[in-house]
Length: 338
Image 1: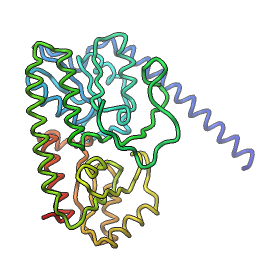
Image 2: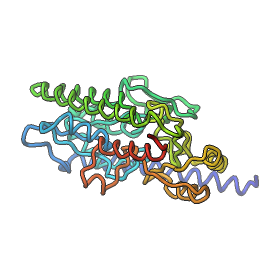
Image 3: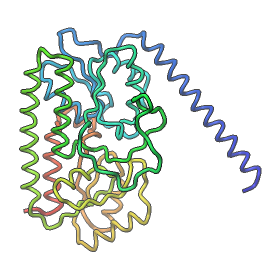
Image 4: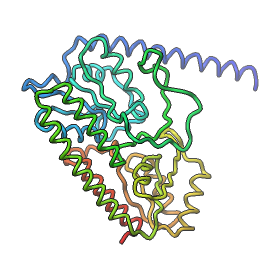
């Protein structure tokens, strides 16, 4: 490589590092400034717990467990990608003034440690990893470097890389575990209403069990069991639970781009197995799905992974259960189930 090109790359790398440091300093300064400002969502004045959940499944679970005893809001705007969300200083201030902060895990919300660390010494906010104790599936390709807790039991501020599929709520047993963790947090913060939280949690878990049985029956007799998905690795838990063969265009993290070889392999499988549909997501590579469908002459069916619910669906009153019911209907059509 010519020396001039090496020098240019070195200057570019130094400039990026400098810019990164400046953004970090600005971020810290804004957090300090905003900590003195009024919260966007002041604490409920009627005695309810104020709860902020990162993504839609947690938001909906919390509403069902808490009922009229909690005021729940969602941190990420509808349609946001939790994998790549850029945390804003105002988010930290907003969460730190809540009673409870619900997040899935550091496999998904890799930025959650910033909120937890910022709030740990100054507020009584309770941070709850709702996925604690859930069954985990490893990603097909695991990162080579370590990540996780720091020496003092906190979260290392180095970049956290996922080793496990974070879409745990798509497994019915995991969803029930998350409900238990949310209920336990509500009881910790509001023991006088503990019986209400327990009753609501048990009732909602029964609805999840009913949905699970619908999936088992609905997907028991299908012409194919191949779930071919032109998106990121999002439906492995669902496929694993109901014994489907899952293929995805991006077979590792949400950051991975499918290679031409992967795309050609999927199209070859479509032709070989005579599949009639490709499944896609609204916010992840819908154009790729359309191109693959055009090339192979098959149809398209939408699946929703739960955390990228759009604004229209959110405002129309969609719930975790209704989204999963729609997913089941599309799976039955795409897999030609009887």
